[in-house]
Amino acid sequence: MQDCSQKKAVELGLNVKPWVKTSLAPGSQVVTDYLEKAGLNTYLDKLGFNLVGYGCTTCIGNSGPLADNIVDAIQKENLYAVSVLSGNRNFEGRISPQIKANYLASPPLVVAYALAGHMEFDLLKDSFGKDKNDKDIFLKDIWPSNKEIEETLKASLNAEMFVNRYSNVAEGPKQWQEIKTEKSSIYNWDENSTYVKKPPFFNNLPDEPEGFKKIEDARPLLILGDMITTDHISPAGNIQKESPTGEYFMKNQILPKDYNSYGSRRGNHEVMMRGTFANIRIRNEMAPGTEGGYTKLYPEEKIMPIYDAVVEYKKRGTDLVVIGGKEYGTGSSRDWAAKGTKLLGIKAVIAESFERIHRSNLIGMGILPLQFIENTNRLNLNLKGSELISVINIENGINPADKVSLEIKYLSGDTKKIQTLCRIDTKNELEYYKNGGILQYVLRNMI
Image (tube, rainbow, N blue to C red; front, side, top):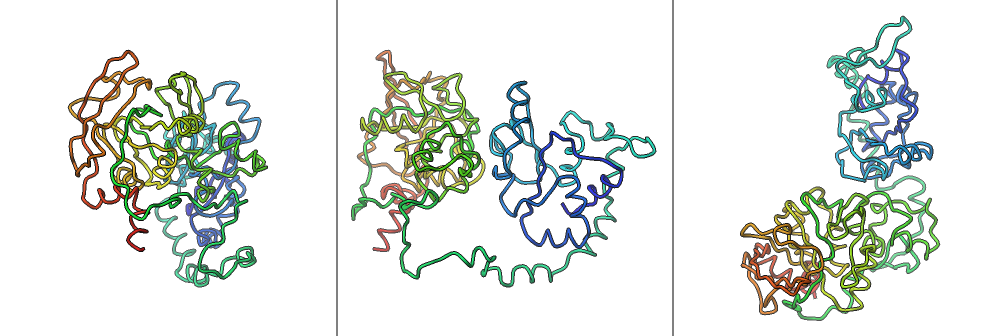
């Protein structure tokens, strides 16, 4: 927030509205240095924009919970609460589980909306309040001029700040230096850790690639609409107490205050697997009326958490697929969106189109991306989740960009065959898929 808007706001007697949660989380400690040198940190503190940390914080859901009375009001009145942040992510349910919309803005606008207190405020016309002379205060009265910003930057920012902060960055703070470590060529895994666990990707790995495996009578685990982001697939933010992940923490005697976030727990596959498709805003068309990580188990037609259904399907030896709409996997290039999908046992994702990086990541985890063609999609195929889906003759091998046939068995007894496009696009990607994923491919080459 290297601007002067907060200084002018304080001097004019403005305050942030009491129901607005504020925080300041710069990407670098140098920001603190030049804010202090400019004398702006004092004004930020007075407005409630107190420093909470550095790096990924607000936009990944780590800025802390809303006050209990605010949460109660949101739930009781069914309020459409929103956030305004100067970060670079505004995915559903990520900033806070109580927030339904997130607006990305410049730092001065973040301050302005905090002063306004609501999103229906017209920044060009509405008054923030009165000054000591009973005159209306408008945005133009607190907005910094280009000259003010330039002069502030010249007086407060220099290269020495970066040298002083980062010339010894590898040493870390005192807390980092006090961490006890062991000199070893391999990592000493702590079985009791809920943050870092040995992942299972190489367990029982055969010497030779397993090649093409059958995908037969697979059950849809989710049927999803358009623009499903990697944050829907693998959320980075809040962990709900009433969830498979919450149950896992309870078994490991972790209190809700210590849950932290999925982003902080990404070194533990048990957490991330349970969190896959658990975004509080994801809507699975198989379980209408629900929101956040539910599916319908077939043939029982029982609504249950996705992870719990996966556990049951694994007992039965049932293959699983995911059905999607347009631009499946858009957003951050989050590797756990593909890793979690793999660990849930999903063999293929069938969608109308894929985001480029996520498609590649799926293949890198040994998951087959298939694209609907010939104007077919989940809607005109009337997919409900009760179907059985087979990839015909995949065990005989496929090539990049092949047409791949699917057989859909409906609950009524009817069957339908459709063509899909194999979105394994290159020979290298084909090798990754045949090896079960890029990790296995690299390891076998190293051996």
